[in-house]
Every structure is written in C-alpha cells, then in structure tokens.
Length: 155
Image 1 (cartoon, rainbow, N blue to C red):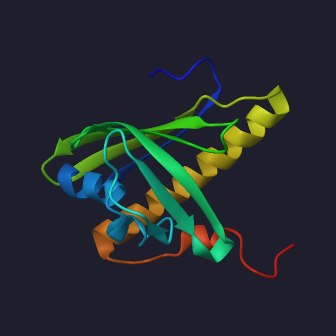
Image 2 (image 1 turned 60 degrees about the horizontal axis):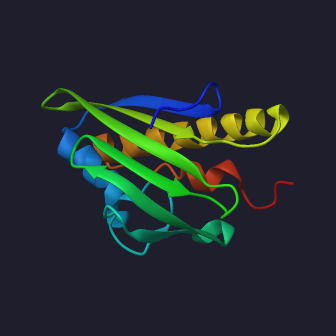
Image 3 (image 1 turned 90 degrees about the vertical axis):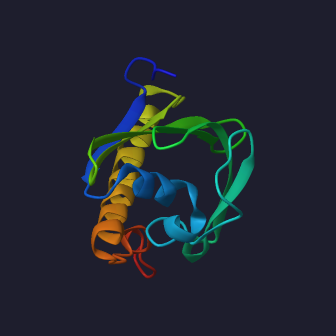
C-alpha cells in the first residue's frame, strides 16, 4: 500500500513507550479517546467497521480496518463514500521502551489545490494526534490538542 506520487500526507514521532503499549493506544478507543476522538464504537479489528466520534464537533465517521498486524501496522479506510483515503500506521520499536510511529494518509483526490489543502490538513491533524499520544502515554497528560485546534467562538 505505497502512497502514489506526492498525493499523501505524513506525520512521525518518537514515543518513549513499548511498542505494544503504543499500538494498543491506537486500536483501543478507551485509550485513543484520551488524545484524539471522544469515542469509538469498539476496538479496531481487521475486516470490521468502527465508528469514531468527535463530540465537540458533532462529527462521526465510519472507519474500515483493512490491515491489523499486532505491534507493527494498522491500515484503515475512512472518509466520505466518494472520497475515502487510506491511513497507515507503522510502529517501529527502537528498543524495549521507545517506539517510532509513522502515519501516512494516502489516496487523496482532486485538483492540485484540493490535494495541497488535504495534505496540509492531514499532516497538521496527525502531528497533533501524535503529539497528544506522546503526552498522554509518556506523562498521562491530556493536552486537548484536537479539541483546541478549532475552539468555539473562533470564526
């Protein structure tokens, strides 16, 4: 599932926790909700659909898990029915207490302006997700980065 040309977004971060703990944080909504969406309908399972909800924005979307390789890789398909994209997480353990996480969002469609906008938004969004995951997993801090990216009252 290689991204085509330059029509993809990428964000990466070192998280100083064991790979099993970091991997679980992205498949278990009880953990993921501490740094990304507010609730999920269940754990990610290969071949299954899951609903993710961002209650602060009144927004939900359906996620289909295509690949789930424990402690190694997650690939999901998400988005509006006519504009789905793939999101791939690669988990690389550097040692027993450090994991490098790479997130790629590919399959972006549209004219060059639309693709540039999607790349920018996706890169920014996944960078905030990774920073929030790092703060939560390493220090048990909930930074509310996703919530505070679009605060109420700001046009």
